Image (cartoon, rainbow, N blue to C red):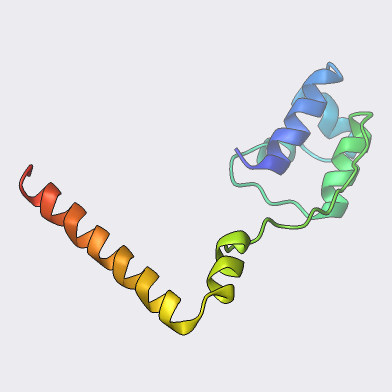
Length: 108
C-alpha cells in the first residue's frame, strides 16, 4: 500500500468512518475512496489534504535532507592522502579482494 493510501485509510478508521461515510463527506462515491486507499494510489497533495480533512484529520508535510550518498569521512580520509598513499590503499584493497575471491572459489 502506498504511504498516501495508508494515511487516508488509517485516518478514516481512526475516525470510525466507513468508506461510504467518507465518500459522502467528500461528495464522491465509495469506489472513489476505495481507489484512494488502493495500493499504488498516488493522490495529489490537495486530494490527500481534502480526504484527511473529511476524516477530521490534518496534513503536515515535513521536508528533511537526504542522507549523503557517499561515506563522507572515508572520502575526506582519501582526499588527505598523497597520490602514493592512495595508490597503496587501492592496491591493498585489490589484493584483499583477490584473496577473498580465491578463498571463496575453493569453497564453492
